[in-house]
Amino acid sequence: MTDEIVKRDAPGDPGNATGNLGSAGASGPNVAGISVLKGVILYGATFSFAGLYVYVITRILAASPTHPPNLDGTLIGAAAALAGVLGSAFALEIGTTVDPSETNHDLRLALGARTAGHGSRTERALTWIRQFLSLEPSATDQPSWPKTFGIWAYALIASAVAITYVTHQSETPSAIRPLAIAFAGYVLALIKAAYSNAS
Image 1 (tube, rainbow, N blue to C red):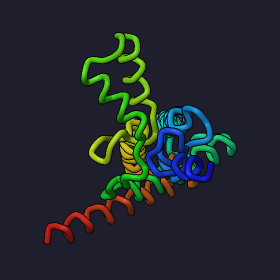
Image 2 (tube, rainbow, N blue to C red):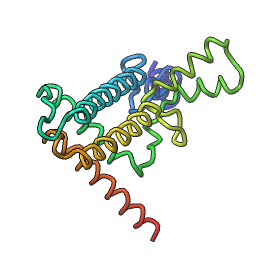
Image 3 (cartoon, helix red, strand yellow):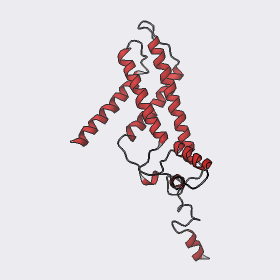
Image 4 (cartoon, one colour):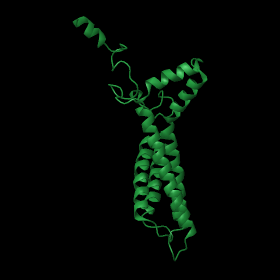
């Protein structure tokens, strides 16, 4: 009986929760599809960030120097909060590598089966959708598509806000200016790091 328990708890045994890592963590996920759920939430946050700032930029461009846009404080607060989170992620993700423990093992197996031609066309399509939505990449040399989308969206929108601020300073509300300044700081830090690495 004791030998059977020890054998079942051995690392790598199919019956052991720690032997079959579904995603990041030593004990595997407790919720099915958690990586996809995280990815969907990140997509939603990124689309919200982009939508809010496109709206703000449109209002600024349509305003006049004597009549700056009157923007709702709640909207500005939500936009600033999303900008802070995505800005922090931008600063952390640029120039970092993926930890092997933060990859999605199950997704890697599914992709391997898809590459080998196993499974029906529907199963292969679902694997592609899963790859697109999964927060954790399948391997250290593969991208996380939700993170990739978020980083690129932040960079593009923050650049647009910075340009809008420079060209329409009088019309830009004071609550919007920190995003332009913060993004400029991230860009300067990135350029400094790039030249430091080159030297």
